[in-house]
Amino acid sequence: MLWPMLAIALGFLGLAVLAVLAVRVFVEVRRLSGQVELASRRIADASGELERAAGDLARAGGAART
Image (cartoon, rainbow, N blue to C red; front, top):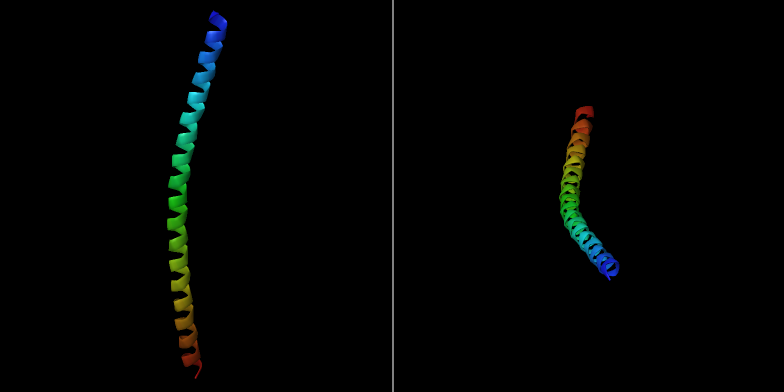
């Protein structure tokens, strides 16, 4: 009777450990997705600034040739 109860207790503890690890993974994935979203916004902003700077440079180069 002792061994089956011990096996059940260890099985429960194993599931509890897996549940805790799953929650930790979920929290880290949420945090990572927030960081990816922030980096995506920064890249989009930098891309827009680069396009504006390239347009200004093209106009300045065209004016210098004339």
